[in-house]
Length: 200
Image (tube, rainbow, N blue to C red; front, side):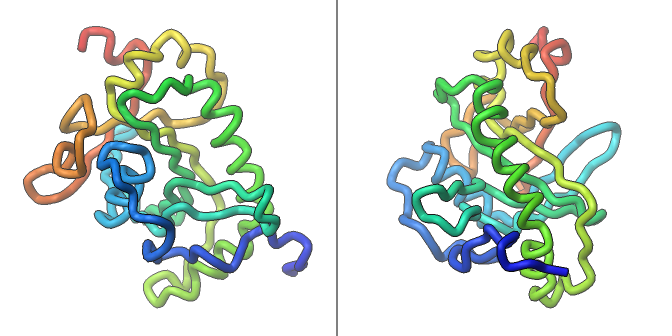
């Protein structure tokens, strides 16, 4: 049973809607990257010898009813197995270390999202294509160009967490959405581990 005091979701900035927030000016900042990815709607993730198709259903999704304490998830995704994805994006030149991003952003979003999950699922079910969705798992992703992970490679080893570090398959840097899109418009992602790309 849903309890009102458990609902830390705000009513604005609904899922499946990108018509909110200010239009970013800089095409390579993280907000612009997130917005352009959301407009693409789908990410193809190669992970554990399978390709996952992640539908992006939320952009700058707020958690928290107190505006002074609100946090925003860059992107929220959903795959065919009804796994929900928290996706935090970083750009080429971000100085934020992966361990700090995981601790101070992704894990906090995860804890808040777990509390709000019944409301998130109810909101997803309002979409005609997702009326029967039941979310049993939340996966955390830090998505950035490969160059970001290479720059912070020694720090990644310090992250003892179940976060997936994902990078764009087409380009090691992000300059605009076309730079990471295949000819058919799809955006392929790979998972990063320190020892898997030592020769790149």
